[in-house]
Image (cartoon, rainbow, N blue to C red; front, side, top):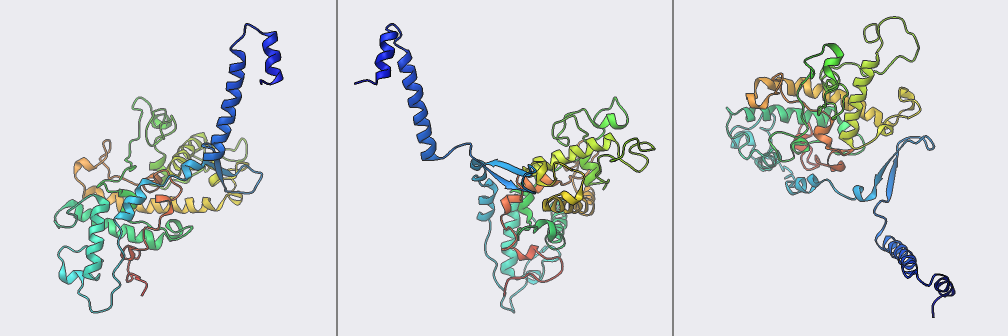
Length: 364
């Protein structure tokens, strides 16, 4: 009845009653596990995105289970979306029929203005947005509309890099008056030191909770400092960081920024760089150009639109150290995804926010 090996083992080990049970249990468990994996799929199965030449390790692996999970913000955005009403000509305009219409939206039809206003109130979590012309939220909202339209039209190379995606108020706000993942100036972070030492070795959000410099966002996304690592030649004459070439401090600051970008987009280094030559612009991926353009976009966004808001915002909305206006960076929009809202097209139903000066394109 039993296999020969089982009878033989019993004759040679008459007192060991647990061995066979353990052996059968292990084999049975392995068979059960294999059956479940075949039936339901491997929970740790991965997929990879090839970002550069094969054989160079330029790929970004992700768990398929993670890839299958949608950004929870997508459902909320779609719930707030309605199709535009294509003008037929002769409709009453918002400038004639409504009060406190933000500049640039006066020419919209009443129907399209009302639907856009309702959406902006839901996107920002401000139910009375634009009701009070004296409110600081109204003044800020006027600036934000201009900023959003500028991003969609003049920075399409970044916000529409792979396909039409665009941005709306919801891209950053996600239903809250103040977007998450904004930042303020906090350097120096070490009051007992001077120079470079005063800006690092303190765990902060800006340094992604490492001991790297905490002023990378400030220097690169506000001041426009050139991103650089080191000189390729040894024993270069002069003082690093002062005589026309970067030193180890700039390398640390650059790594701090790259670490922030990586976490903001949920990608690794080879998403943009070739690992055998990080410094060589001739061996990077197409995503490197998209990211470089994004850095320039954020520079303009911060200096042209957000920094000037410091004169409009109440004190409780300003930075805790320097009293500065909140600023944006990659994570403000991306929230850990390669594309905000995983590439959901947020602008197709909102042509009113897609152009700076032209008429909205309703597809008619």
